Length: 120
Length: 136
Image (cartoon, rainbow over all chains, first blue to last red; front, side, top):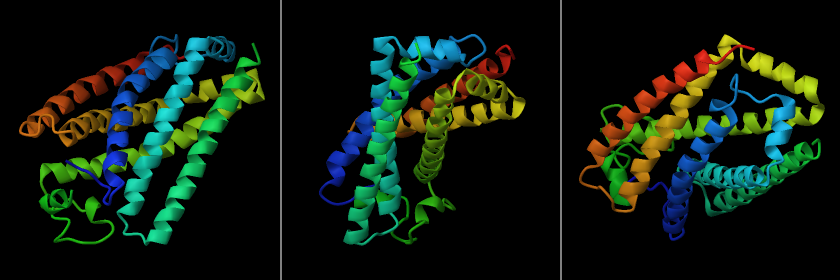
């Protein structure tokens, strides 16, 4: 329907974007309910955050959520940028920069989660 | 894929930002433009959200101060704006994914309006939930 990417890699990147999006519907719903809707007042206190993230299942699900949302966001930004009509060189730069930003975001999130776990 | 662009008149109306120009376009073009706008907004939110969480490394009082701020009416209103973005992007995205995979192609407009109706109900429920939380 609305396949933004063109070119040979567009097809499987589009599929990756669609599948990560569908997975996000589930992971985000879980994230919002678990972090906000079932929490008294909508936001966990400091001690509650530490206790929550110390649950290994929670840690795994939140990291999976971070990986999926970072991938989906990166592919989405790439689609928007590529529609500006970039040269092959500029496209390679976009790919490189977005990949690096994605790695930084995930590494930061995992580091942050481990730091918070360490406060338990 | 290129045919889809013609459907939305992007061939006639070329230009880098033509996807944003929905004048005289069909429903799909509006959905596409709003999907991108909400998507870009959600990326911005994601970055802010991740940065705000770093307050957790600065100790208990910094985090609890933030919680107090986040419960102010202006923040709660922004939460509802966020829910609009999430619901539109997520529910419209379900349609884009399904139709792109060849599912429900003939009924994509019905699918769109069913999903948007679900979204409107969920938006009202989330707004109620956001504003009814105890302000402690």
